[in-house]
Image (cartoon, rainbow, N blue to C red; front, top):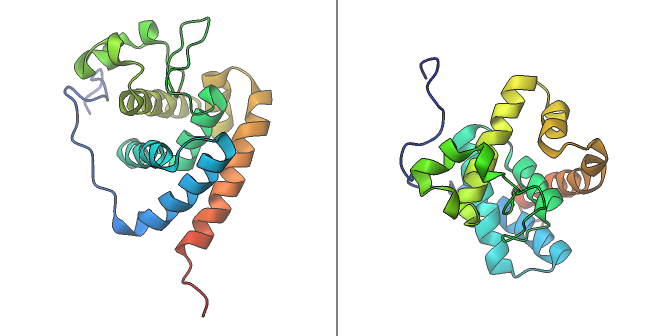
Length: 171
């Protein structure tokens, strides 16, 4: 992109297709998240798939996106903070209004797919700026203590299940 050009879509993007080899990984993470946060598998699968799509689109590990959702909203798509942060990834619409404009404006901040899309873009920007995942998360979440609990749990278990899901079944 030319310097000064925003790196967010100018219209609602077509969802990139997930490759078939990711389905076992998505299914394994869906099971983990649905049990841990007591939400339906169907709803969870949609959220996990959205995290994978956005991870592919912006170049982030989808487990990182899922972990941020876990810490920020505990998978509650209508979560709102006293500071004005909204949705799964607790994006503050007034600070990121330009990212929401092409997607329907700030009123769509609570739509899960849009919230994940904008939240992933913001996280990627923090990562570019800091050059370090820990620093980017500290900027994003504002508190390293939050990172130790939820993020580490999801990342460790998710990676373990990712490995298991991708291995051939034993006979």
